[in-house]
Length: 407
Ligand code: AMP
Image (cartoon, rainbow, N blue to C red; front, side, top):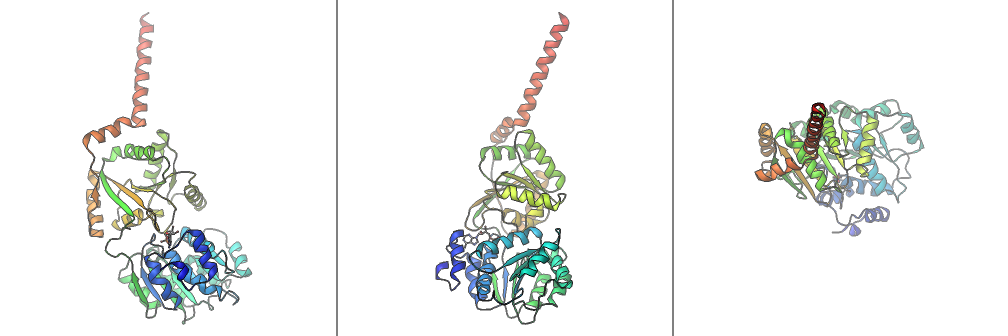
């Protein structure tokens, strides 16, 4: 069934057309009609499945009939600033032909401009729980008129310690409302939270067996720790037009890889928890817009954030937490696009690979490289060649100095 056949407002259909969204993804196919019907939904789905539009489309449609009613009528709670910004963008894009007003509220920035916008009238709020709680308790945001509540990436919200904020916020919400609960993973704690806030939900689970999207070809390459930078250099140089997202274990490693790339003439960006919020936003913008095509990041950016057209994900280091493998490779192959993920696995990381395979209940293909090819990669790196050329120059210089002295 195509979007044109859906019973949704023509303004939303028009923006879907602008986006090039013709057919619903799996989660959209299962969720949209139920949300339109007013059902509660409990969905286990990762990002990359099109889950944001799965709730944004029906919510915007409902709001096109309600925007004349004053006050905030829908709240989407998300774990991070980046996600709040991204989801607000999706609502703005899909709602651009409607009269519906969406506002993102999150911490780390001044609250005054957010309060000013709230006073001007807002229909949908996308918020991190902390800032939402602040605004509600100061009386700037009233939740008593909420008809729809969405919890997105609920598992990450719990991991980040938002359980109490969420529970406190629920007290301000009307009991009779529609609740949509989205989580990438499920465990006892998440189930407990979910069932305490939804009523007879429609349950939707997307690709439970293979958590890696079928749009992503992922494999592992045996590379020793010290040689990883040469393999990354080759990949970047062989794919100059492609967007490549590289994951490393720590912020120190991120800066080291950045320097190693700089030594061989490759420009890149880094993203990790050591960066200021403002820098992080700038980095994301530059990478999204393709100003820089190589981003070296720690796991801070492996969850939720949607960066268009990332062709390659490189696990420069394997993740310590097996689940993060799925989140990392999920940064590529988004929506209907295809993507490639490569993991550089050193001898000492083999146990981590095993954990990942156990988590996925699936082996990761090994991309075999012959000894000769491995040697060839080392032989062509600019860093070693530059060093080698420098050594030759130094030797020649010394030899000519010696000759001069003899004369
Ligand atoms: P999400 O899982 O919400 O982060 O969405 C992942 C990506 O899928 C985003 O880049 C969306 O633009 C894209 N997307 C969502 N719905 C569709 C659709 N029906 N057709 C094609 N792409 C889509």
